[in-house]
Image 1 (cartoon, rainbow, N blue to C red):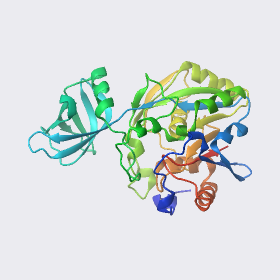
Image 2: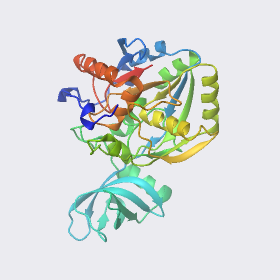
Image 3: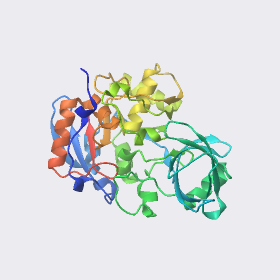
Image 4: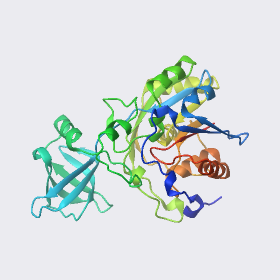
Length: 345
């Protein structure tokens, strides 16, 4: 069956768009969606442990968010300009989104003597920007002056220091810095909940997908097959792959936490399930797709007409996804990055 972009639209009251995270993290709502029985139940996220079984494998994305939004001023005019860091090309050169009028040769000044020059227009909505610092010195400085690039639907002060902690999973790895946005399904987990899950006999393993422009890029074509995903880097260790294969053989469930984990696992499956995996992927999952690795998914509620909603619809089925979303809206669930969650199994 062919689907158009408008097939993935829905109406959401503005007051259901979460502006702040729930505290504690695991007290958000959790909608349980059974693919076979089509039964829907309403729980809290800390009840997730009751829906997991010994022998299940939980796959988490351990990518760490960095404060990728930099606000500077043009050296020649003093005009404000924003730089959104996306991909480190090396030697101080970054692929970036630029907010404000930009042209090749523009010099931008930031606090603490950080400077940058726009050196290339990539002609695809991004620019190459060369900074006067690179490597660990650069990251140390942007951790001081950078802002968390919260999505535009969060209508409040984006300069809150609390977002640097709230918009980060508790299991983000210090040596896996690279995401411009959080893998938001993971924001609901606390260390205590993870300990309870492991105590039940559920294994936990990690993949890495550095969340980039693909998360922010809207689908602009009514024919969804014409949409091109922005490539993102993914990696799965030998140990994690070994556990996935072991779980599959024992008829356990491989449960992806978030669409980023799901896309990483399916990119690996689509590559023939090699024993070790690190690659750039632009995998696009929409209804009709046959999942190769993922059995179940923990995910937030996503924007209308988004590739994330299409992925969820591919796993749960489009009609069942629509039913779940309508029930979540009628039950006043909180939507999007800081919102509530759903477990599809």
